[in-house]
Length: 362
Image 1 (cartoon, rainbow, N blue to C red):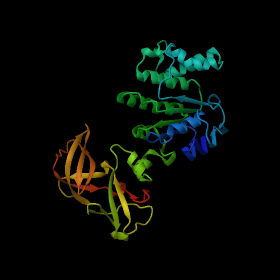
Image 2: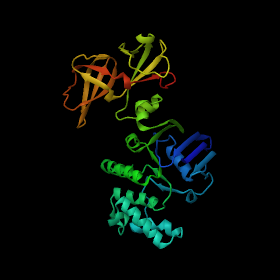
Image 3: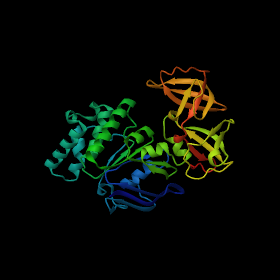
Protein backbone atom coordinates (compact mmCIF):
# COMPACT_ATOMS: atom_id res chain seq x y z
CA UNK A 1 0.00 0.00 0.00
CA UNK A 2 1.35 3.43 -0.98
CA UNK A 3 1.70 5.89 1.88
CA UNK A 4 3.09 8.94 0.06
CA UNK A 5 2.89 9.49 -3.68
CA UNK A 6 4.50 12.35 -5.61
CA UNK A 7 3.30 12.81 -9.18
CA UNK A 8 5.11 14.94 -11.82
CA UNK A 9 6.22 17.41 -9.17
CA UNK A 10 8.07 20.51 -10.33
CA UNK A 11 9.17 23.54 -8.39
CA UNK A 12 10.60 26.77 -9.78
CA UNK A 13 11.87 29.91 -8.12
CA UNK A 14 11.61 32.36 -11.00
CA UNK A 15 13.68 30.90 -13.84
CA UNK A 16 15.48 28.46 -11.47
CA UNK A 17 14.04 24.95 -11.69
CA UNK A 18 14.76 23.21 -8.38
CA UNK A 19 12.70 20.02 -8.87
CA UNK A 20 12.03 18.57 -12.32
CA UNK A 21 8.95 16.45 -13.04
CA UNK A 22 9.72 14.23 -10.09
CA UNK A 23 7.80 11.00 -9.39
CA UNK A 24 8.10 8.99 -6.18
CA UNK A 25 6.02 6.32 -4.42
CA UNK A 26 6.73 5.47 -0.77
CA UNK A 27 5.20 2.31 0.70
CA UNK A 28 3.31 2.16 3.97
CA UNK A 29 5.78 1.71 6.84
CA UNK A 30 8.83 2.33 4.66
CA UNK A 31 11.92 4.23 5.79
CA UNK A 32 12.97 6.24 2.74
CA UNK A 33 16.10 8.40 2.78
CA UNK A 34 16.54 11.35 0.40
CA UNK A 35 20.29 11.60 -0.09
CA UNK A 36 22.45 14.03 -1.99
CA UNK A 37 24.84 16.98 -1.78
CA UNK A 38 23.80 20.48 -0.75
CA UNK A 39 21.54 22.09 -3.34
CA UNK A 40 20.32 18.84 -4.90
CA UNK A 41 16.68 19.47 -3.89
CA UNK A 42 16.23 16.88 -1.12
CA UNK A 43 15.08 19.31 1.62
CA UNK A 44 12.99 21.18 -0.95
CA UNK A 45 11.18 17.94 -1.83
CA UNK A 46 10.59 17.22 1.86
CA UNK A 47 9.19 20.73 2.38
CA UNK A 48 6.87 20.26 -0.60
CA UNK A 49 5.53 17.02 0.92
CA UNK A 50 5.11 18.84 4.24
CA UNK A 51 3.24 21.73 2.60
CA UNK A 52 5.83 24.32 3.57
CA UNK A 53 6.42 25.20 -0.10
CA UNK A 54 3.86 25.68 -2.85
CA UNK A 55 4.74 23.54 -5.85
CA UNK A 56 4.75 24.82 -9.43
CA UNK A 57 3.22 21.70 -10.95
CA UNK A 58 2.22 18.15 -10.03
CA UNK A 59 0.34 16.48 -7.18
CA UNK A 60 1.08 15.04 -3.74
CA UNK A 61 -0.95 12.24 -2.13
CA UNK A 62 -0.67 11.11 1.51
CA UNK A 63 -2.56 7.97 2.54
CA UNK A 64 -4.51 8.16 -0.72
CA UNK A 65 -5.67 11.75 -0.14
CA UNK A 66 -4.71 14.55 -2.50
CA UNK A 67 -3.01 17.07 -0.18
CA UNK A 68 -1.39 19.22 -2.88
CA UNK A 69 -2.99 22.41 -1.58
CA UNK A 70 -3.74 21.36 2.01
CA UNK A 71 -2.21 23.23 4.95
CA UNK A 72 0.66 21.41 6.74
CA UNK A 73 -1.51 20.80 9.82
CA UNK A 74 -4.09 18.98 7.69
CA UNK A 75 -1.69 16.59 5.94
CA UNK A 76 -1.35 14.03 8.72
CA UNK A 77 2.41 14.45 9.13
CA UNK A 78 4.87 15.03 11.95
CA UNK A 79 8.08 16.89 11.13
CA UNK A 80 11.48 17.06 12.85
CA UNK A 81 13.79 19.87 11.74
CA UNK A 82 17.57 20.25 11.75
CA UNK A 83 17.30 22.81 14.54
CA UNK A 84 15.56 21.59 17.67
CA UNK A 85 13.09 24.52 17.58
CA UNK A 86 12.08 24.03 21.22
CA UNK A 87 10.40 26.75 23.27
CA UNK A 88 13.15 27.75 25.77
CA UNK A 89 10.75 29.01 28.46
CA UNK A 90 8.72 25.78 28.51
CA UNK A 91 9.54 22.46 30.16
CA UNK A 92 9.95 19.34 28.04
CA UNK A 93 6.44 18.30 28.98
CA UNK A 94 5.02 21.66 27.89
CA UNK A 95 6.99 21.52 24.62
CA UNK A 96 5.44 18.12 23.89
CA UNK A 97 1.90 19.18 24.81
CA UNK A 98 1.75 22.70 23.37
CA UNK A 99 0.67 21.78 19.84
CA UNK A 100 -1.94 19.35 21.13
CA UNK A 101 -3.38 21.99 23.48
CA UNK A 102 -3.64 24.49 20.62
CA UNK A 103 -5.54 21.83 18.64
CA UNK A 104 -8.04 21.52 21.52
CA UNK A 105 -7.24 17.92 22.44
CA UNK A 106 -8.60 16.64 25.78
CA UNK A 107 -6.12 16.72 28.68
CA UNK A 108 -6.27 12.99 29.38
CA UNK A 109 -5.46 12.20 25.74
CA UNK A 110 -2.56 14.68 25.82
CA UNK A 111 -1.19 13.02 28.95
CA UNK A 112 -1.50 9.56 27.39
CA UNK A 113 0.39 10.61 24.26
CA UNK A 114 3.16 12.37 26.21
CA UNK A 115 3.59 9.34 28.47
CA UNK A 116 3.81 7.02 25.44
CA UNK A 117 6.30 9.26 23.58
CA UNK A 118 8.45 9.74 26.70
CA UNK A 119 8.57 5.98 27.24
CA UNK A 120 9.52 5.23 23.62
CA UNK A 121 12.25 7.89 23.58
CA UNK A 122 13.37 7.26 27.18
CA UNK A 123 12.96 10.89 28.25
CA UNK A 124 10.67 10.37 31.30
CA UNK A 125 13.26 11.88 33.72
CA UNK A 126 13.55 15.00 31.54
CA UNK A 127 9.87 16.05 31.44
CA UNK A 128 10.22 18.79 34.09
CA UNK A 129 13.43 20.23 32.68
CA UNK A 130 13.79 23.15 30.29
CA UNK A 131 15.76 22.92 27.02
CA UNK A 132 18.75 24.81 28.46
CA UNK A 133 19.19 21.96 30.96
CA UNK A 134 19.41 19.32 28.22
CA UNK A 135 22.27 18.03 26.07
CA UNK A 136 22.09 18.17 22.28
CA UNK A 137 21.04 14.55 22.04
CA UNK A 138 18.33 15.02 24.67
CA UNK A 139 16.98 18.09 22.85
CA UNK A 140 16.79 16.16 19.61
CA UNK A 141 14.88 13.37 21.37
CA UNK A 142 12.39 15.97 22.59
CA UNK A 143 12.07 17.37 19.05
CA UNK A 144 11.33 13.85 17.79
CA UNK A 145 8.86 13.41 20.66
CA UNK A 146 7.00 16.55 19.63
CA UNK A 147 6.36 14.95 16.24
CA UNK A 148 5.60 11.59 17.83
CA UNK A 149 2.78 12.87 20.05
CA UNK A 150 0.84 13.92 16.96
CA UNK A 151 0.19 10.20 16.35
CA UNK A 152 0.35 10.48 12.55
CA UNK A 153 1.13 7.98 9.81
CA UNK A 154 4.02 9.86 8.17
CA UNK A 155 7.09 11.37 9.83
CA UNK A 156 9.44 13.75 8.01
CA UNK A 157 13.02 14.30 9.20
CA UNK A 158 15.12 17.16 7.81
CA UNK A 159 18.77 16.34 8.72
CA UNK A 160 17.88 15.90 12.41
CA UNK A 161 21.33 14.68 13.49
CA UNK A 162 23.58 17.15 11.68
CA UNK A 163 24.01 19.43 14.73
CA UNK A 164 25.29 16.59 16.93
CA UNK A 165 28.82 15.31 17.46
CA UNK A 166 29.89 12.01 15.91
CA UNK A 167 29.26 9.83 18.97
CA UNK A 168 25.78 11.23 19.58
CA UNK A 169 24.92 10.88 15.91
CA UNK A 170 25.83 7.21 15.99
CA UNK A 171 23.76 6.65 19.15
CA UNK A 172 20.68 8.48 17.88
CA UNK A 173 20.98 6.73 14.52
CA UNK A 174 20.50 3.41 16.33
CA UNK A 175 17.57 4.86 18.30
CA UNK A 176 15.87 6.10 15.12
CA UNK A 177 16.27 2.67 13.55
CA UNK A 178 14.77 1.05 16.65
CA UNK A 179 11.97 3.65 16.71
CA UNK A 180 11.00 2.83 13.15
CA UNK A 181 11.04 -0.91 13.82
CA UNK A 182 8.75 -0.44 16.81
CA UNK A 183 6.30 2.07 15.31
CA UNK A 184 6.30 0.82 11.70
CA UNK A 185 5.26 4.30 10.49
CA UNK A 186 6.29 5.75 7.16
CA UNK A 187 9.42 7.86 7.59
CA UNK A 188 11.07 10.16 5.05
CA UNK A 189 14.54 11.25 6.09
CA UNK A 190 16.77 13.89 4.47
CA UNK A 191 20.54 13.74 4.84
CA UNK A 192 23.79 14.44 3.00
CA UNK A 193 25.54 11.76 5.11
CA UNK A 194 25.70 8.55 3.10
CA UNK A 195 26.56 6.48 6.21
CA UNK A 196 23.25 7.56 7.77
CA UNK A 197 21.48 6.67 4.55
CA UNK A 198 23.02 3.21 4.26
CA UNK A 199 22.35 2.29 7.89
CA UNK A 200 18.81 3.67 8.24
CA UNK A 201 17.04 3.25 4.91
CA UNK A 202 14.81 0.58 3.46
CA UNK A 203 15.36 2.45 0.19
CA UNK A 204 17.54 5.41 -0.77
CA UNK A 205 16.69 8.07 -3.34
CA UNK A 206 20.00 9.59 -4.49
CA UNK A 207 19.37 13.09 -5.85
CA UNK A 208 21.32 15.51 -8.00
CA UNK A 209 20.09 18.71 -9.64
CA UNK A 210 16.47 18.15 -8.62
CA UNK A 211 16.35 14.69 -10.20
CA UNK A 212 16.37 11.27 -8.52
CA UNK A 213 19.40 9.51 -10.01
CA UNK A 214 18.73 6.11 -8.42
CA UNK A 215 16.02 4.74 -6.12
CA UNK A 216 16.76 1.34 -4.64
CA UNK A 217 17.79 -0.68 -1.59
CA UNK A 218 21.06 0.47 0.08
CA UNK A 219 23.08 -2.60 -0.92
CA UNK A 220 21.91 -2.38 -4.54
CA UNK A 221 22.92 1.27 -4.75
CA UNK A 222 26.26 0.50 -3.10
CA UNK A 223 27.12 -2.51 -5.25
CA UNK A 224 25.47 -1.54 -8.57
CA UNK A 225 25.37 2.26 -8.90
CA UNK A 226 23.61 3.38 -12.08
CA UNK A 227 26.06 6.16 -12.94
CA UNK A 228 29.35 7.80 -11.98
CA UNK A 229 27.71 10.35 -9.68
CA UNK A 230 26.01 7.71 -7.52
CA UNK A 231 29.15 5.54 -7.50
CA UNK A 232 31.31 8.42 -6.31
CA UNK A 233 28.83 9.82 -3.79
CA UNK A 234 28.05 6.54 -2.02
CA UNK A 235 30.82 4.93 0.02
CA UNK A 236 33.49 6.14 2.42
CA UNK A 237 36.19 6.17 1.20
CA UNK A 238 34.89 6.67 -2.30
CA UNK A 239 35.04 4.17 -5.14
CA UNK A 240 38.31 4.14 -7.09
CA UNK A 241 37.97 5.35 -10.68
CA UNK A 242 40.44 4.58 -13.45
CA UNK A 243 40.03 5.76 -17.08
CA UNK A 244 40.27 3.00 -19.64
CA UNK A 245 39.27 1.52 -22.96
CA UNK A 246 37.58 -1.75 -23.88
CA UNK A 247 39.61 -4.04 -26.14
CA UNK A 248 38.66 -7.37 -27.69
CA UNK A 249 35.41 -9.27 -27.98
CA UNK A 250 33.73 -12.31 -26.45
CA UNK A 251 35.95 -14.28 -24.06
CA UNK A 252 38.97 -12.09 -24.81
CA UNK A 253 37.49 -8.76 -23.75
CA UNK A 254 39.57 -6.67 -21.35
CA UNK A 255 39.87 -3.09 -20.14
CA UNK A 256 43.13 -1.26 -20.79
CA UNK A 257 43.60 1.41 -18.14
CA UNK A 258 45.06 4.84 -18.80
CA UNK A 259 48.53 3.76 -17.71
CA UNK A 260 48.58 0.89 -20.21
CA UNK A 261 47.77 -1.77 -17.59
CA UNK A 262 45.39 -4.44 -18.86
CA UNK A 263 42.66 -6.16 -16.78
CA UNK A 264 40.67 -9.15 -18.15
CA UNK A 265 36.89 -8.80 -17.70
CA UNK A 266 36.01 -12.49 -17.49
CA UNK A 267 34.09 -12.11 -14.20
CA UNK A 268 32.30 -8.85 -15.01
CA UNK A 269 28.52 -8.96 -15.55
CA UNK A 270 27.71 -6.32 -18.14
CA UNK A 271 24.18 -5.12 -18.76
CA UNK A 272 24.96 -4.78 -22.47
CA UNK A 273 27.63 -6.16 -24.85
CA UNK A 274 31.03 -4.55 -24.36
CA UNK A 275 32.09 -2.78 -27.56
CA UNK A 276 35.68 -2.80 -28.75
CA UNK A 277 37.45 0.60 -28.38
CA UNK A 278 34.71 1.98 -26.08
CA UNK A 279 36.10 4.63 -23.70
CA UNK A 280 35.11 3.69 -20.15
CA UNK A 281 35.69 4.46 -16.49
CA UNK A 282 36.61 1.39 -14.42
CA UNK A 283 35.37 1.58 -10.82
CA UNK A 284 36.15 -0.65 -7.85
CA UNK A 285 35.68 -0.07 -4.12
CA UNK A 286 38.62 -0.24 -1.67
CA UNK A 287 37.29 -3.39 0.03
CA UNK A 288 37.03 -5.20 -3.31
CA UNK A 289 40.77 -4.99 -3.89
CA UNK A 290 43.43 -7.24 -2.40
CA UNK A 291 46.99 -6.11 -1.94
CA UNK A 292 49.88 -8.55 -1.39
CA UNK A 293 53.65 -8.60 -1.57
CA UNK A 294 53.66 -11.47 -4.07
CA UNK A 295 51.59 -11.97 -7.27
CA UNK A 296 48.34 -13.92 -6.73
CA UNK A 297 45.95 -15.81 -8.98
CA UNK A 298 43.53 -13.66 -10.96
CA UNK A 299 44.05 -10.18 -12.45
CA UNK A 300 47.09 -9.02 -10.49
CA UNK A 301 48.94 -5.79 -11.26
CA UNK A 302 52.13 -4.26 -9.81
CA UNK A 303 51.79 -1.17 -7.63
CA UNK A 304 53.66 0.90 -5.05
CA UNK A 305 52.44 1.95 -1.60
CA UNK A 306 52.18 5.75 -1.30
CA UNK A 307 50.88 6.10 2.26
CA UNK A 308 48.97 4.17 4.93
CA UNK A 309 46.06 5.47 7.02
CA UNK A 310 45.54 3.36 10.19
CA UNK A 311 41.82 3.28 11.05
CA UNK A 312 41.76 0.97 14.06
CA UNK A 313 40.32 -2.40 13.01
CA UNK A 314 41.62 -1.91 9.47
CA UNK A 315 43.89 0.38 7.45
CA UNK A 316 43.47 2.32 4.24
CA UNK A 317 46.46 1.80 1.94
CA UNK A 318 46.94 4.28 -0.90
CA UNK A 319 48.69 2.84 -3.95
CA UNK A 320 50.34 4.23 -7.06
CA UNK A 321 49.19 2.06 -9.96
CA UNK A 322 50.94 3.25 -13.09
CA UNK A 323 49.91 6.91 -13.33
CA UNK A 324 46.81 6.40 -11.16
CA UNK A 325 46.25 6.53 -7.40
CA UNK A 326 43.80 4.23 -5.60
CA UNK A 327 42.87 3.12 -2.09
CA UNK A 328 42.65 -0.41 -0.69
CA UNK A 329 41.14 -1.48 2.63
CA UNK A 330 43.40 -3.99 4.44
CA UNK A 331 43.74 -5.55 7.87
CA UNK A 332 45.53 -3.29 10.33
CA UNK A 333 48.10 -6.04 10.92
CA UNK A 334 49.15 -6.18 7.25
CA UNK A 335 52.13 -3.94 7.99
CA UNK A 336 52.51 -2.18 4.62
CA UNK A 337 54.85 0.80 4.50
CA UNK A 338 55.33 3.67 2.01
CA UNK A 339 57.38 2.70 -1.08
CA UNK A 340 56.67 -1.03 -0.61
CA UNK A 341 56.39 -2.86 -3.95
CA UNK A 342 53.12 -4.79 -3.95
CA UNK A 343 50.58 -6.47 -6.23
CA UNK A 344 46.90 -5.54 -6.35
CA UNK A 345 44.13 -7.96 -7.36
CA UNK A 346 40.66 -6.89 -8.50
CA UNK A 347 37.41 -8.59 -7.50
CA UNK A 348 35.70 -8.21 -10.87
CA UNK A 349 32.40 -9.59 -9.56
CA UNK A 350 32.07 -6.30 -7.60
CA UNK A 351 33.63 -3.95 -10.16
CA UNK A 352 31.71 -1.33 -12.16
CA UNK A 353 32.15 -0.08 -15.71
CA UNK A 354 30.78 3.28 -16.85
CA UNK A 355 30.54 4.74 -20.32
CA UNK A 356 33.00 7.66 -20.30
CA UNK A 357 30.73 9.84 -22.46
CA UNK A 358 27.32 9.20 -20.85
CA UNK A 359 28.65 8.31 -17.35
CA UNK A 360 26.00 5.56 -17.21
CA UNK A 361 26.71 2.06 -15.94
CA UNK A 362 27.48 -0.55 -18.61
